Length: 310
Image (tube, rainbow, N blue to C red; front, top):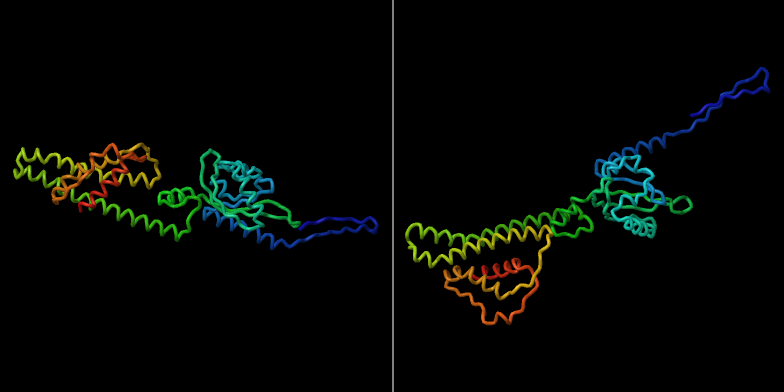
């Protein structure tokens, strides 16, 4: 509401007029309140809202973006949003995709950068804004920090290009827990036999059932049992590294030599069951080497021989 006081000198005596202009702002006030409530709701959900002009400068930014990026609200306003990208060219590529989307929402996952230089993964949607003439007016979108979610997906051996839906994510978690339980149960089962045999050998020696000379003869089998236990436990270490996505150094590996080592480690278990493990050691030079990780390949042979004996 605005007022203006006018005086007309043409009227005697002079007459004073008060002119008032009134505009109903109920609707705009309601929209502003709804906008504030929406921003508050998005912030509670960890979602960032932004709007940029056609040149990529921030026109509006929710408080959640300031909290996430560590830039103040004043710093974000007018900022070229390329500065938020780890690789500015990625934003240019994204904008080209949005321009060609004919106003549809474009889903994207991007590597963004905070004010202090630390990086995080952001996932969200963005779409094109047009003016009344149908020309590009700017861009607006929503995004959230999905860094921890993608890291967990990587641990679950799931594609990290985008986040899974909650239902699918839960299913993968359940599968992974089931796999871990099965693996631990399998390792425990595999350790039971060699550990039991090892303990029995030591108990026999302690109680005099096996004399020193006999024990000396059996010592290599005792050592073999201990080595088998060590090899089986190493399965846990390697599995942990695999699930974490760690790399393994690859070298030329002689399969025949690994086979002989595995035979010696399991020979005592085979003898206890009247079995024999035979390796064609006369043709060692004829077996070519393979490119791989020696200990991981050893685990393959260990598992095969251990299962065969059982």
